[in-house]
Structure formats: C-alpha cells, structure tokens
Image 1 (cartoon, rainbow over the protein chains, first blue to last red):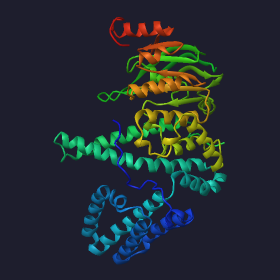
Image 2 (image 1 turned 180 degrees about the vertical axis):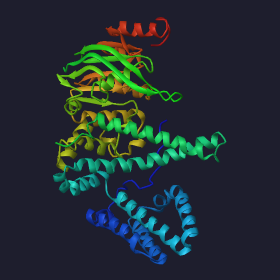
Image 3 (image 1 turned 180 degrees about the horizontal axis):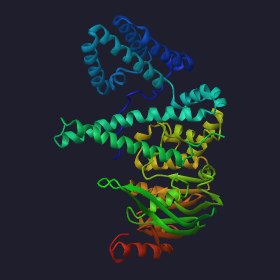
Image 4 (image 1 turned 90 degrees about the vertical axis):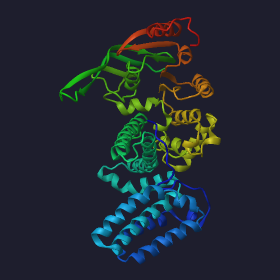
Length: 209
Length: 244
C-alpha cells in the first residue's frame, strides 16, 4: 500500500524572514528544551495555559498562519481527549488540564522549531551537537539521520491512519478497532522495511569513516 | 565499465509455516552464475521470479546464502560499504527512498559524507540538480512532484555520489507514458553501467544484454530481441500480439 501523506503533525519548514526565522538556532533549541522542562515544572493549569498562549502568539507573530497551527489538531485532539478524560478520572480536572496543556506546549514548541528551521540546518546542528560523542564510538551523522527519518515518518504514519480509516468506512467497518488499527501496524512495518532498504542501498546507514 | 561477477549464487530464506510452526527453506535464486560487463543490462521476469532478489544482490542489500557476488573484485558480503559506494540503487517507488522533504535536501543528504562543509555540499547539490534539469523543482516538497519528477529526483540523489554502476528495480512501473519516455532518455544519457529490472519490453530492448529470470534461475541470457521474444513465449504471449 502506498501511504497517503497527511500534512504536518509537526509542521514542515515554512520559508520566511520573520523574527523567529532569523533567531539563532540555539535559541530555538533552548525554547524546545525549556518547554520540555516546563512540562515538569508548571504545576498549575493556568500557568500552563499562559505558556501555551505565549507559544501560539509567537507562532502567529512569525506569520506561520492559523491554518498550519490547527491542521494537526484533527490528529492529536482524539489522543489529548482520551488523555484528558483518563487523567480527570484519575486526578481531577485541574491536574488533567495541566497535563494536557503541558503536552500541547511541548508539541507546539517542537512545531515552532521545525516550521522555522530548514531540515538540513537542523541536521547540521544535531550532527554538530553529537560530535563530542564520537570519542565514545557514536556516529554524529547517524544521529542526524535518525532525526530526519523521525520527522519524515510522522506525516506518513498519520496519512496511513487516515487512509486506513477511509478504507474501513468504505467497507462499513468504521466501528471496528481491528479494521482501523491492524492495517496501520502492517503498513508501518512495511514502510519501515522500505525505508531501511533505501537507506542501506544509499549507504546512509553505514558507519562513519 | 565495471565488472559484476555472480558465481554459483543461491539465495534462500527461512519461512515458518503458521499452522505447523515448522520452518523450511524457500529458495529465491539458485545456480546463478553470470558475468556482467555490458553498459546496459535488462532483467526480465514475472512477479516473484527472483529478479528483484538478483538486483538486490548487486549492492549487498541481499547477501547470497551460497556462492559469491563481486563488483570490480569487491565481495558484497565482506566489503559491503565499498560496494555500495560503487553501486547506486533506485527503487520502484521513489517515495520509499526520498528521505528529505525537498529534492535539494535529499541530494544534499547523499552528499553529507562527501562534503562536510555546508557551502560545498550546497554547490555540489546544485550542480547535480542542474545536470538533470531539476533545479526549478528542487525546493518543492517531494510529495508535490509528479511520478516522473520524483523518479528523476531519486535518480539524481543516487547519482550525486557518482557510483560507477546504477541498479534500478522496475523504475518505470509507476510512471505514465510521458514520464517513462523521460526516464528512458535520461538513462540513455548516463555514463554509468545500468542494470535494471523491468516489465517494460521497450526499455528492455534498449539494453545490450537481457537476462530472463524464471523460478529463481536464469532461464535466458543473450541479446535483447531474443530475450524479449523468449520472455513473451514464457508468458504465453504470441509474438504477433499487438504492442510490446
């Protein structure tokens, strides 16, 4: 099965010259790290909501557009909804709101990074950051390649979910969890194998000199 | 031209019977011994005949269970990395091998180990894109390109590192007539030794040598016209049947 591509769970690069596009790469990495740290440190849902609002404001002020901001919502909303309901049941509404908002904060911060930095610059930065680990036998290019594959796989897998959902509906099986999940798993495995073969054929997975 | 030698090659995989739980050996290729030195070689065969396995042997994607495969004297099992540096591989579906969001980035990805400096890499990628007339498409998402454009972009990304042999597994299967012709012209203009599998008999007729694979064995090895006629007979299609 050829996978349908679902646009931007993590936004792809959006060309532009905004203040965020021009900001040094390290500041954006620091922002993503800060969002990750904040998800542990923000203990009040109102603080989490403020942080999410700040990231949304940064997104809009960079001219990245509302459409790109809400495009992945259809994909992540069900997951966040389930998480919200479960956490509400476990810990109550305040904790549930905080957890979901903190997750959203991490997701939006990562999307802000990928939307304002071309992937090849991200790869250079990751490979550069991983260079000190070379003395321990790590290959910086493999780090970079892993990031590239991860970012590429997200829209492919999201597309696969949508395609399998359409196929299940066409057969009147929209309520069947099995019909909606097993083909996704099988196509994900097939996709991983094809990608692995392609990387191996290009020598991209080979150890560095 | 490179020299590719397959000597007494057998490829077998272990297959588990889901009912009994027992594993048995399934032979994909057996008794394959060929010496490929021609500029253009086409491999014909029905689906499941073993032609993709044969091609995958050539750059070490598949290793022989018995026998050996050598490219310019390099053993694919022992010197896989060196072999992959010489043998580029293009898959049927270019989306399987275009890793990056745009063609330019994908060509640059191929060049990462060859050019550490970003500026050198960008210049080398631009030269490759110009050579294939793809510069105008280089910054578009690979998902926005047509099938033929994608296939050419995948080809450019593979050829960026200047392999001496290019292996293509059914490169025209997903292409319409116009893009198939574009691919044919592009392949005809390459300096590399080209070995491809195909169901496109016109593409096979462009080759200097044709191998027909049937049930895991080389059933025919010879000239293109005879090879195509043999394949048609094997498929039970009369020679006078319209269209190739």
